[in-house]
Length: 506
Image (tube, rainbow, N blue to C red; front, side, top):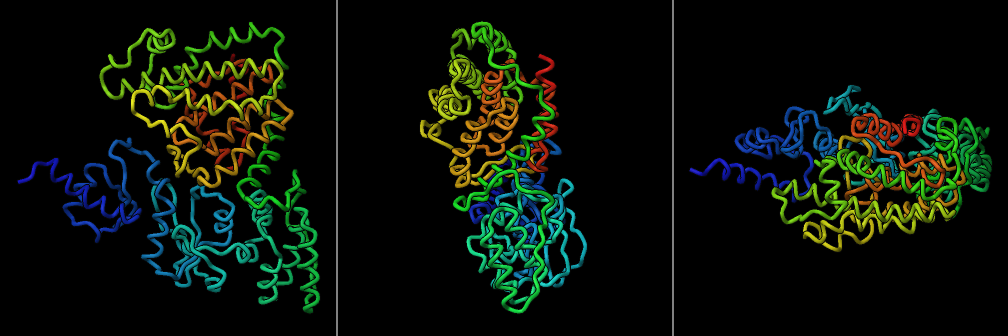
């Protein structure tokens, strides 16, 4: 008889076969009862609903949502395809979110199903699928993206609810900016005789500065015998001009969010004191806060460090080979990396204090901060040197967050634009708040994004004359909740208030 560990290994091998096939949702029928119960008991799968499971990590604490949020889209695609075959499609509004790169997990996923029950199906962590009994769009108006059946972009713009322009203006403007030729919209407007929708889309196009497309829609419909009353479905004018050359919805969304969020930051964040005159005194404050900053920043990320370890690492009075235990070793290496990175950040602050543009300095130096942050782990053989080369090359998920960071392709578009926005921003408070938020929203690295975001924040603090500010471990929940509000809900106010409160406490 095989030992218990051998039995578990046997069950894990069965699960691995399914995962290697790209399966995110596991049905009861795909596992024998013995394998299923063994994997469930040991925490390697989690039940989502009766008969459906997802792979999980056995070391996840009770109530941990990370594996579910990471699996959400894949699970929904598999579940809906199994239940309805090809007779389903996400709502036009949800389709537009995905077209514009917003893969945040919704509380309720709206799905069109001709034989739907008009009722919700409960999932984990207060999420659900609601199958609306509605007809599907024509076959040519649908596409499949990552297993999800969605409206294509022109069809989604025609079919979406008018209220969506007011409730999700950034998303809608980003979607409209993706339309290269109004003829794709016109074919659907003419085929359905949608004169009211034509007037709405013409007004929306004019709102974002696409006058030629607006005229084309209105005049073509009128030439076909329809009466078109153009109306602007947005409540206000855009805060920025959307370039006809910029087709990336990720970049357009970030630029619009920056312009919209900065207004809230300016209202809620204390005015900049201005560059400090006494550079030496400012750098002395930075040096004095190091131990507290390192302890709190590393602890927020889950490392177990002490003030004693941080001091020994800072002074060089340590030997990583003498530290026993894998986790203790990793903690010590993280502490050493933080110290090395902190020294690089301090040099960047010196450049900023000499009136170099803070956005330019961060754009030039952040790769150095990152290399120093993980250099000890490379020296120890835990990471490969290639791991320090550039931004991530795959997907990444944030623990307990409904926010899904942009794809690796989007990261390549976003990061240069992010540093351009930082460089062009003339208000120090906006650079502090949006610099930190947008960096962790993009999540350009596989690891270290939180530490890097706080380093960047403090370089921006220096440029405004604000003191180096520590995010305390005891406020971690408030910190993460505020970031979640901005990432998923688009509301920067809680994060701006949170950072402003920390500055006042320094």
